[in-house]
Amino acid sequence: MRRALNQDALTGLLLLLLGAAFGWGARGYHLGSAAAPGPGYLPLGLSLALAAIGLALLVRGLTRAGLPLPRLALRPLLAVLGGVLLFALLLPRAGLVVALPPLVLASALARPGARWREVALTALLLTLACGGVFIHGLGLNLRWWG
Image 1 (spheres, helix red, strand yellow):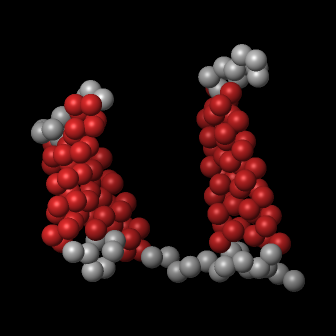
Image 2 (cartoon, one colour):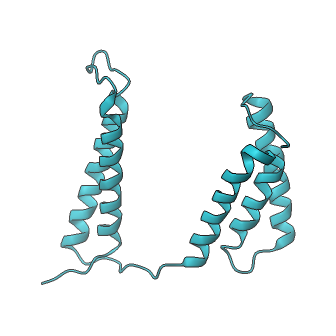
């Protein structure tokens, strides 16, 4: 009997690939031992755990009938990705006040029926909170304005 690819199998495959990628990235760090762990000990351990969870989900998804894959929702995907890309382009050049509100506004496009007054208030409060935490609280090298 042929099983269709389902949510568990796809999620397991994604986690397995992410665990393998992070494990590959951690290979350059010194591992150490359990008594004296090096800088690569935790990343390698976490990547192995992630890969193991992914493998278990992949096997479960391929051996059992699960939820079918949902239809790909392009509008939320493109809205959020576009907002993040816009933020990444604007932040170094224009500062936090200019970069963060377009991210919030673009992300609001992902949800039909968003109330624009609430979105604008959220953008304002999030900009003030992020500036307070990251610029003043943590002292990160970010600018309010370009």
